[in-house]
Image (cartoon, rainbow, N blue to C red; front, side, top):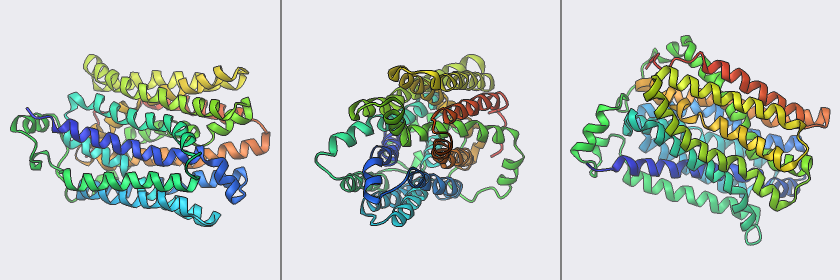
Length: 414
């Protein structure tokens, strides 16, 4: 039996790595950007949130297009777009232009993860879905974790503007390979053997690209599991976006770490998240096989969110920089341990419309990504302390743990 589905997985993993390379570098380059444009913390928060605003708006239309046109066409188009706007970030001449480019960059990336879910729903049978999803998120978050060190290593050789140009060029190369090699239907790929085709078809439920069900959005609005999934995903996105935007500043200002220590400890949560992504995928497959789809995914998600909530609530009282950094890393890893279960739930609930359901969940998360930087900026402005931000994130994870208990992944609506 051929193994083309693993090659597809590898291409999508590289896609995830590129998305986070492009979006995580802005946090590391924040001092250079702030200096170049003379920005305040609130203005820099606007730069961070501009991406999340457009990302939230573009997710559902991107998922809808993926279900209708297929991910070969849609991913090629969106990767080209966001790569060009990554280049445009480095070419921005004013604060207003920078905001506009970041908005367009966010709109371009919005379809990426729904398209990944759609691709996995067509190419990966349920028995392998947890570990495949885990590998995807692991690649993405590992890249986020090492991006600060990569950027720091490049700065002696390239300006902050040239770094954005170089990163954008990598996305254009990926899009060219995807457009030529990938096929939406495994049966249409010349490398897929009859045995692999039958194995994939026996374990997947998604339909070929086509006209979407007009009643889908009504069923989405009436589904308690969909609403619980959306609320559950919000703290995940808030914490992750804190890590790629404000965490380097937090480490410098709260714990007075130097540049190299900041690079290490701002990357640590996402390196650990990469390990948690993969092990969480393995654990999801095991939990579903051992306890069933509903109990396995619910239990894994609720326990992990409880750990994240506890770690974040404790962190403000910690005076030792290394321990505080490790607690934030633990909370991030516990949060990301649930990603395979969360996106696997979207695939199960969505059925034939997996991309749309994944986009709805991801959009709710980006609402948190949009407001999160402002939460930090304004609480710092009003209280002069980082503590309220961390306590608020801990509370959100406690609410998310309760939402995990309300999700029923067997409630198929697509």
